[in-house]
Amino acid sequence: MRLVLQLVARLLLIVVLCLGAATVWATFDAYRSVDRATAASAQRVAQALQALYWRELLLRSSRAREHLLPVPDWRTLETMKLISPGVCVEFQPAAAFEKPLCGQSEGLGKTPPRWFAAIVPTFLGSHAEVVRPVSPRAAAAGTVVATPDGAAAISLAWEYILNVIDVALLMAAAIALLASLAIAHALAPARAIVTALQRMARGQYRTKLPRFRSMELAMIGSAVGELGGRLEEATEQRAALTRRLIEIREDERRALARELHDEFGQNLSAILAFANTIETASTRDNGDTGIAQDARMISQATHHLMASLRDALKRLRNPLPEELGLEASLVNLVDSWRSHSAARPTIQLDLRGDLTDISGPAATTAYRVAQECLTNALRHSAAHEISLRIERRAGEDGALLIRVEDDGGGDAERVAQSAGFGLTGIRERVTAAGGSLSIMPARGGLSVAATIPLAA
Image (cartoon, rainbow, N blue to C red; front, side):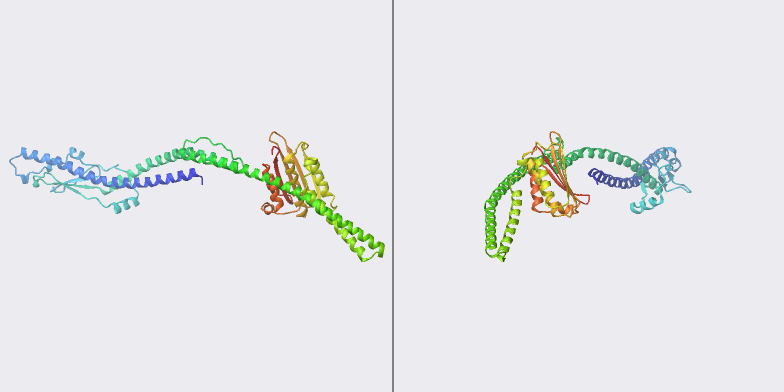
């Protein structure tokens, strides 16, 4: 799940929790507001009756206080205005058949569902009546009793909840939209950082990032830039060390070739001469004896060793591209494999582009890659056809493409993970030249492709 969606989802969860808390508080406040309205109604009516009481007392001073009651005059429109909606008020002691005077409760709120009407009184309790004396100094003046209407309280609470939910839903939608835009804008630089890391994974270490306003993102961008610089330096150092190692290896190969030629070659020539002398002497003195036959076997073994030594010297001495050029050396390489045996698989050589001016490390690396891939295809597979294609890619940043395909089967993933000396050597050479090597499955076999920059 994308980070923007995760943050928006968490924000919506917080909004929902706040909405729930606001709904609970609105329900409690609306339900208890009826109690406050009841107390206020009782207080206002009591004050109004107190004024009536003292007015009657002053106007009718001949009457006894215990018979002085403002009952005839208190049930007026002015008194109705003092009673809050959903509250009923009565005067004690009440006259016969006297009904409470109630405030308007019609249209106080929408009719709540049954489950709400059943839950709210259970958790919030019932409403208590409020009693206020008409006059604190005259107990005989009576009292005012205000009683809240439970149904009106529940309807008022439901009305409050509906209003809160409507406003809260609009706020939640607005917050979700604005927060999504704000979060997406704040996290937009992360895409540039990820792109830079992906380029670094492909070898483009010097990736310049824009300046970020956020301090945290700026620190991340700076760290990515420093990491790219260090990776590039490490890669350059590793390539330089690899090139130096290859140079040392070539020097060792040439030195070993000289030693083999000077020591082993001369000794084998001497052995062959001695064997020929023994064979000639034995044949002249005693005819075709066992000694002559043994001498011929020694000669044959010596010829075989000398042929093997010549092949080893060809591989150890200076590569052919330095002498013949890349194109001629590749043709010579393919012809040498073709001439070994008629039973060998068919080798197709495809040269594309002008290869005459390619020399130096690029030509040597291309030749070694082609040589090693042909050797592996011929020795380690049952291929019937092998294709070697060398292509020069045009342009200022041109490169040399080498591809060897065979139909001899094989597991590309296993071969790519192989730690054999041959593949390790060509990997090192290609890396040192600043190129890339890939091993992939081909039609019926494997495909080894290398890209070597001509600037290497």
